[in-house]
Length: 176
Image (cartoon, rainbow, N blue to C red; front, side, top):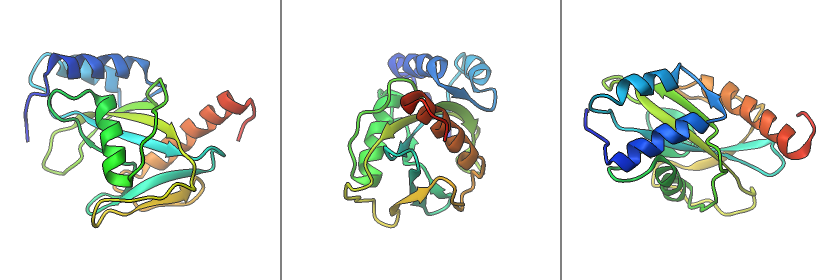
């Protein structure tokens, strides 16, 4: 599954957002710098949806990956930020303003037969009282941050927890 995501706009937006990301994992910025000189694998974008109390995260039950943040592939001509917003709406029924700085940038393979690709994680703060409307067979669900959840990306839990702790400290001035 190889195709070129350029639209220059999409690639340049990914490079800019990768540089602004609060957290970097998997040496993603160096990987992006090497990869941008050839045909790019699809970019991925997701949203770490956090409740205003900074105690819960919203995940979607993916048929192969388990519980993951809402997200997916950046479509040709689409920026990663726009893709994250679109995927959030499609997979949860929620529309929200994403926080200005991306939460994280990482590199991973989303399928055993696919090459690693760049993923940008954005964040949104949304109340848990809003109704959820997921895609068929992929229900969304709120998880307490201290809860375990089954995922092919077990590192996501620690990454999201660390981000939420830093965001909560920044927003409220107190450590969680």
